[in-house]
Image 1: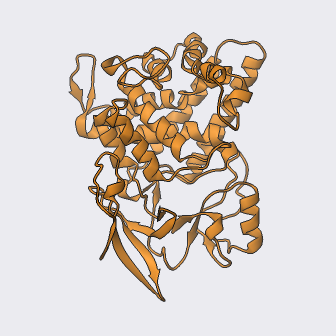
Image 2: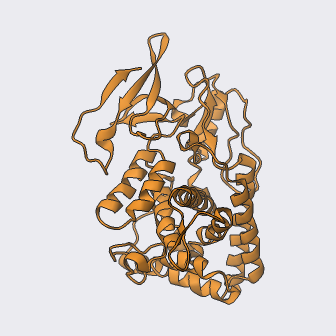
Image 3: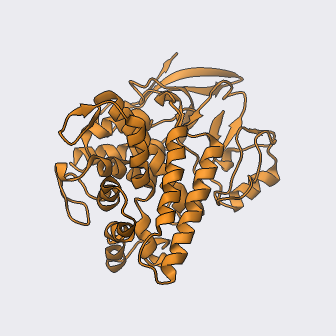
Length: 379
């Protein structure tokens, strides 16, 4: 299967996965197995669906694997959206805190995600489709949780986590992931205290509006404090916009004063913001998101060790996606070498035949900054 944009759909293509609007609780718009028609294609464009999975001869045998079972993901996104709605209603009635029962609900959602998180080889991982822009808020919380937990699991399995005596530990990773996931799900909870017209503004923020947005980490801490969550959850919410070199907010923290949970959350948060469709911007391709994080390492913003774990999880050219460079589609990714993800193997039509080639895209890697030209090598 492969992931394509509606503009590339043609009559007779077969959907490989359900198409959802992104709105929580709604039934799929189209079910897997449906043959695409011109009417369906037009409808997808009209409602803002940006990508769909299809089966065709070119993608036969390509099997991207989701980090979370699609039904589990829908259930998680629905539960998070409903909980956030209830919290927002409570705050609109004058409350000043997240109700304890909602914190418990979200903790249960995260526990289910952590228990269901698949141990998928990174080279086969599909992190998610580009949902409609109006689905961004609840999708972003779940997506950041998934990416953050995958980064943490990769890092802790390889290098361990540090206990209160700064000793490396490799035990209790699953329970630690569940605790971390609560902070990830709640990282933007403070935005519920920011006027909606600012959070959802379809354009550039003024200085005054951005100043209000920058209050959301501290607002999140204030909203959560009465429910007494873990200090690690609070550190994630408070510091996910801090940067190692001191350029972040709200406190301009530096280095080790920023907890590892918040440093991982920062990477997941920025990556998903770059590759997601928003009301005011188009989604960037995954390799652009990977490079934004790479550039953050080069300028001292992101932790290089945690970024190495991120780069093992988030592929610049994921399995089953088109490789598009300078507006030209070079083919669909058929396999990835996890040790050299910037050289994906792609399939393309050459006349009436299908051929596979390795595409050398190392020159696009911000970390490398290699001044070499792209080349195609016959497989």
